[in-house]
Amino acid sequence: APPPMLVGFALTPPPPIARPCGVALTPRCGSPHASGLLRRLRSPEVSLVAGGSLLLALVVNRLATEELLNSQSRADLIATVGPVLLMLDGLSNLAITPAEPEPVSLAGGVAVDWLDPVVSGDASRELAWATDALGAGLGASSVAIWRAGGGTLAARGLLTPRAAASPAAAVVPGPLLQKCAGSAAGAPEYLPALQLLPGRVEFSYFPEATQALLMVPLGGRSGVVVLGADRKRAFGAEDVAWARAIAGRLGAALEGGDAAE
Image (cartoon, rainbow, N blue to C red; front, side, top):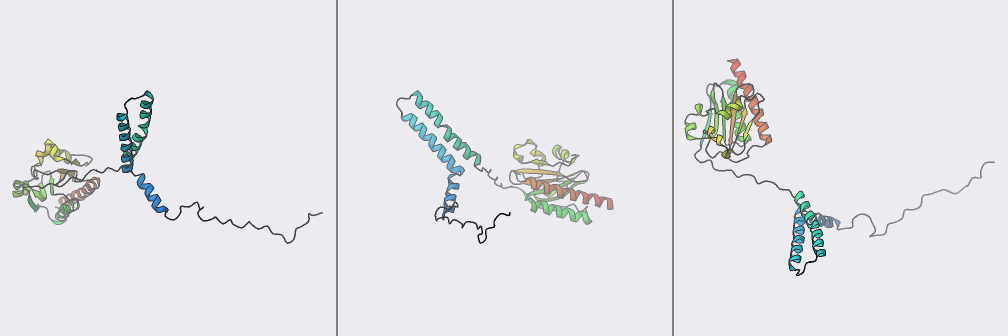
């Protein structure tokens, strides 16, 4: 026989239990202030101050104790572990950013804006654009473009009075410049602290106080773009990449201009 069926009864879920006020698992009203206070207490500065204060208290306590016992020495040694770890944690989380070098005055520099009149057509326009982009875009205080067999193609910014008087012969290639020009990989040469290097005498056409120097080979031919700056470490990785792109474009334009002639 089939089992008897229950009629009129339905299984319904139990009603939800109302959680009394104040027992919620979520933070109460005003908790953003508490979380902000917790973040401030866990900041590197607080860790350093707390660790240093605890170490100072341990030192003062040890100096103020007239009779030192072996047990106290062991306790002091163990107690120093906590403050030291606290200070190490603060140091590891502390964001230390080096100060940006201040620009220096390039006294004696003469402002120059010169392009080789022999270069004409599209190559001349590319040359003018490149000097503008390198000077304004990268913040270079001095720009010189040199080509093997053609001498100085362009000079813009600050040069020494002697170089400014004859910009066509301003760039005198030395060992560093020739090494950069002959680089098979087209790798740039960056001197972030020029004043510390004896090779700075090679770049006598730039003001004597020039702080940083970047040399970038011209793409496709033997030539170099030389950039000077009035502060140390003036050119970052993005600046170097931008200078290489401009130099590559300029070298292709100059090569195309020679082929057209």
